[in-house]
Image 1 (cartoon, rainbow, N blue to C red):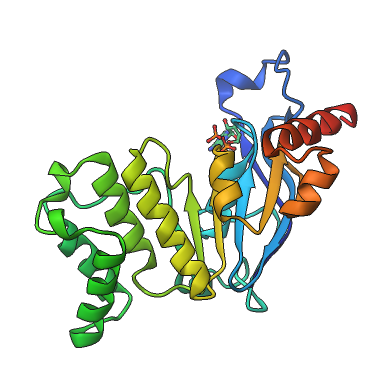
Image 2: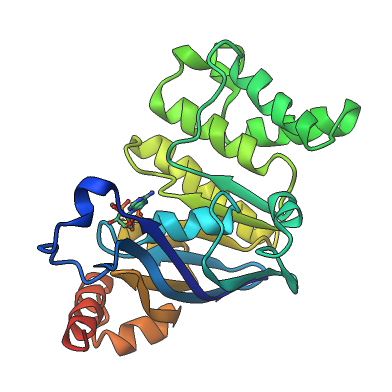
Length: 262
Ligand SMILES: Nc1ncnc2c1ncn2[C@@H]1O[C@H](COP(=O)(O)OP(=O)(O)OP(=O)(O)O)[C@@H](O)[C@H]1O
């Protein structure tokens, strides 16, 4: 289980922006951009949580804090009762993180990339081979395992990145826009893969702009708008609070309700 409470993260504004007073985003103030101001949610075993929000809402910043790549200014992130903000090493082992910017080693093949990360996590011998083979099958990677990463298509790279992110069987899987820019077959494969993680009881948190994926996969959602979680709870509650059975309409209604309170 992962429990996120009251996360905050601000970035110092670059010198050239310091004297700009005309930003319409209330998060820009006192020399800082407050990307994440107050984000809370939880995701239990066997649950999939969709992290939603308009462009620039603070989703990636939040996920980067979960991955321990960024240290929150305030708030807590607990995995199975351990605060990983205080113990980032534990966090790194406990979380499998797919970021939008993760690079693969271009000279290594898809197989070698995944095996390399498996070794970094202490896997070896038969255990390494069987875990990698399992992922290669689940992600239908057979056709390109021995191609160098620099020659892979976007979808092949994404599958390799996902395999590499979860090779150590993390307690929680965190995926930043896992299906963006992918063809239908690859998307479907990744959706099935997330379903398999759910069936294995692994909590999965993923950010997306695709509400059809949310309908297919998610038990709960967290909607972030301008750095603050405006809603966090089950899909049913989301529709109720958003006053619509359609996820798109519920999303818009909650964002608009939030605007009324700013
Ligand atoms: N290092 C940084 N320095 C200054 N501002 C930043 C930094 N990182 C992010 N931001 C700002 O914080 C805000 C939130 O960015 P973030 O990437 O978390 O949004 P997002 O919800 O993932 O957006 P998208 O859906 O477009 O990917 C944006 O306005 C962004 O410009």
